[in-house]
Figure 1: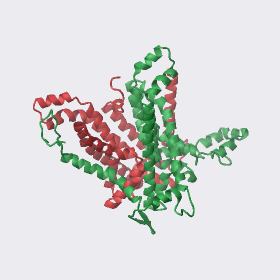
Figure 2 (figure 1 turned 135 degrees about the vertical axis):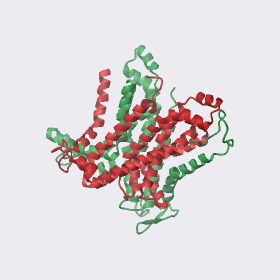
Figure 3 (figure 1 turned 30 degrees about the horizontal axis):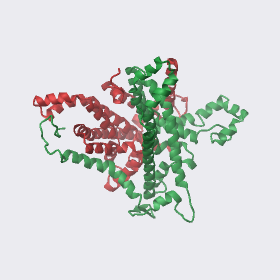
Figure 4 (figure 1 turned 60 degrees about the horizontal axis):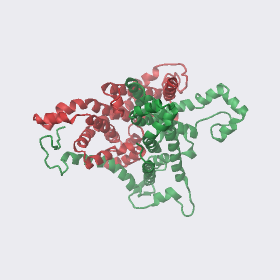
Length: 323
Length: 265
């Protein structure tokens, strides 16, 4: 690492500060090629068109986007299949992100109150579960929620299912799609999908909230306590206002991350309630094989994410930055 | 109040552990199906995963190769990037670092689709080395962050002192910066390693079914249902993650790396 930049304190070996050094030029080339070009390709291909026979060609047509919003046969007929999928992408991601942040917040707060050693141990635990592949997590929840050996079996064996039927709540569960004619079931259901998705990002939520909560000025908390404020009052009037910004920020970050969830949705969501990530895959690699249309859907997913990040920022800015 | 706090944390840990414990226990099943509690417990699934079944053995080898290769590559790219950012602190370096972190921040499926097209055009689709590069780019943000955190802790007065005593920047780098940066570099490497090891969706598009990593192999077998042999994979992965992050915690200050306030102890 002997490539050198000039600073006032050290002998000048690269005196032309204004011109970027060769090292920086190489870095620019690398980053642009690998980090920017792939996204550019997705955007460019989204304007291409499919040729019958599983290939596509470059073009500049808005057809793919038109198909996304109103269907291929428009104006004869109009379908909202893909808009519907986008809706489910957003719906699952919002709920899962909210659940994760709401439950992770008290946990992260308590975590920062522990000794440094204990914090370190919890962080190892959180990082290990955070990095755990989605396929394993889905596998675990699949066993836990499966009809044969999971929660439905436990409910059946312990008589809860029978009791639910007696009380008449079983009909309500069926209406919610959480029961088949005989048993409680979670596969496939929205509950299982959202549950797995929020499990997926829960450790992320703790780790994202951790810095802000850890830097919280404890003296203000103590001052409030000495003045006779109870723990809940302290939470509401001191802690929450201070960390509102990172709290909102975390929800939006997790939301964008969850927009593209693939495995959980394929396994747990009902075919009629699947998301855009699934149809992106189907178009690019799977059964329908229409790369330009897949790319267009990916672009829409990306724009949705970017829009939400922007919205979150303005929202935070509008409410004003707390001290 | 304190008891309630501990209860809440304990409960959260139990929920987090629940699916992991269930998967791990399922690996002991003697039969072909994933039952909990395990039926007819046996350890032969471990032998199948690591030794006798070539599908899993190859997948494991690919996972390790890609994770190690991409993490090393990510560190190699992140170092000059973080160093340039630290030394120059200019707008250009900031934009560059932002672009480098972009693939990690956006939904991975979009980046996966993009890389699929990218390697399709450049002719590397389905090769192991393109998988390595893809993951290196995806996880570039991790060593970038850990190395930047480390560089911020270096006392610039030491560099000035070295310069006054006639040390060239190369010498200063070797004697002052490099030794202090070792734990941060290692942390960045291990973060990238573990996340690459577990990554699924980008590899899914980039591998183009030409080779499989463990996570891909598990997903491919998903249609036929889970088997206890896959659960062995899950146990292995969890063990690797715990070992690696424990190592990171031992190497350096994990709370600081995660952004905790440094003044408290």
